[in-house]
Length: 450
Image (cartoon, rainbow, N blue to C red; front, top):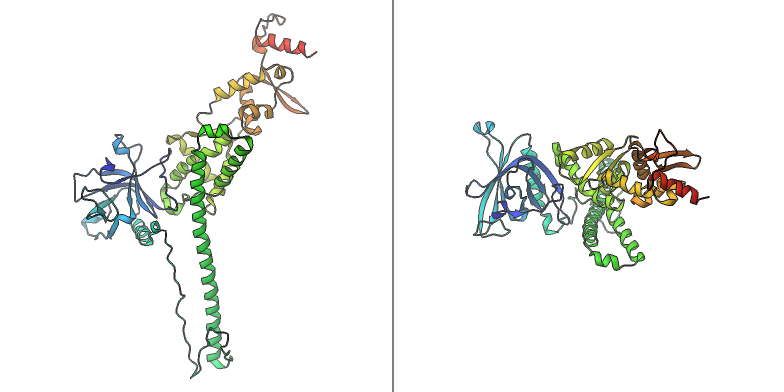
């Protein structure tokens, strides 16, 4: 329904908005209605998440409040289509009503929001609950005036005006190398010397900030380029991957690792998300861990995820408590990842498709091989089979032992795990061997090793 007059917006599997190259989030406001009071026939959007970016105004539906697939579509208003931001006058009646922010956008004759449309209409934002409309309006003005979607960085070509201090007829020093240096004599000389010092400091600061701004702009371009290259690598066809040799595949994996370390274009911060910080951080983390989990076999240590996520966020670091709270919120969202805690206390993040039953089945198949029946398996052996880190494989082996599938042998060489054959032994007749059972296979392997 929202697509009838607003532009559609793409979202990730966790419900986070898919940002365009160079687009950065500025503010998030929960429980916001988006409607058109001039034309009541246009369907309103009720109680959604309002996301202000440097390029667009996004409205994301609340999954718990949507009643139909049509109403659950995310919508966008490009800031380039905004004509004017209107100030709402405060009154005694307005003190008891929900705060409203109105802005004009250009539309087509068919009443669709579009940049440089032939007509205009007013969109109203109704803030309900614990929203901060005043802070939002300030950031709205800043993003609209910034015009980041044009890709042009405005800067001042000249510094602040220079203050001339007279000393009773003396001339001020010029910027040329031939200028004479005035002696520091009397009060006017001291003031002139102090002024020159301030001007020199001001010039140094301007040069430093110009270099810093240039570096930040280049960094944004590099992050956008890296994200684009990563998407192309991930969208490569399976046939091409199968046809490539090992060297080419290794180069592709190294490139993906490098691109993954470049960073997140728009990390969720407490300043932009406010009360929704942990909720949006949880969704962004769910999107981020997909690629590392695929590369690690579907499971990774929580500490490793913490290091990778903080490295990708750059200077916007999060605390371990923030990460743990973000992971614990996954139970409320429909995301394909989950937080798991082993009996040993080790916490991991894994794909929901990485089920314990499937892992135990693969481990049981491994320990029943002839070599494993004789010598058992180590965590490294299980890691090769499962395609995960040895530390995670050891946790799965210990979990399989607690379920009664395996038995453990501890020696100076470390842990060795064997198939549990006690289920096949009759306590009343220990010498009875069932044909084609695990006990029978173990005896045959032991005899063959002699």
